[in-house]
Length: 327
Image 1 (cartoon, rainbow, N blue to C red):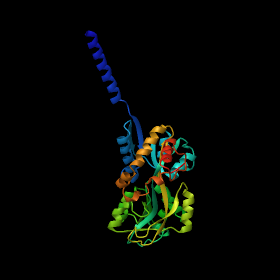
Image 2: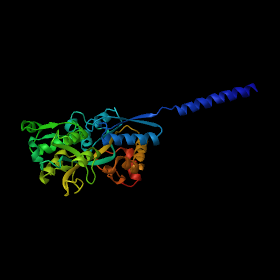
Image 3: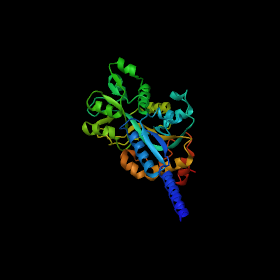
Image 4: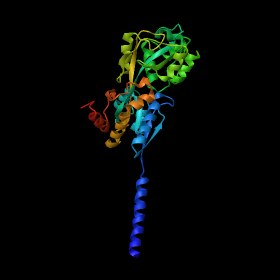
């Protein structure tokens, strides 16, 4: 009888200890780099992290603020595992070109496409500004320093023979701020124009309030100059059009350029985990689009490899093959 009691006690202790080990098993920490707080890029990173935490119990995902230019470097250095960036920055980082020439990021891998922005200078609908050349002596806001948006703005100005220094010498000014702050300054007439993300058939949330309040006019590009801007920027950027009527003040289509945004991931993240992350992200495709709004309609599985001009992580590639979007 005493032996039986001892066996039962030891058995209960073993079962309790085993159960505690299972329950308290450490999770894999996953750092996801978004961009500035309040941006749609950060909102998207947050949504993806929520889905990972909900559907992959062995992982604990946390969103950290970053920037589209710095995120590839921080993934390379393993300060994070996943980073939001533009396809252009991903390509430059992987090749060790541009601002990454002394810090090539050979360990980053393509995860999947997030969305595409069309980027234009915008003026108030009641403004006399009609062309990009009109900005020479105006006060403009071009986005935050170190962001793909701002790089695009400066490339456009350069193609039109303008730089921040030339604009300031001509009596204007160039401010660097978030697109939401730029929009507020434009609405309040602190600046005369801004460079911002827009969309092909729907407007991004940051500029909707000013479009509703006073109206906006996107400034169209000269076709030849736009081709040169796209060539200069590279990295999967393409010529596109804003549909006519998206802005009340502009019934005609407007030339623009589209910048794909993507997530990159470190090559050392295990294939099976990357597969699960990819699967979770695309199984909830409709929920993500619904949460992000109509601007993110391009977030569809058939576009998942758009901008994939660096090596794709094998775990993601396995999922893309399963759903039939690549061989």
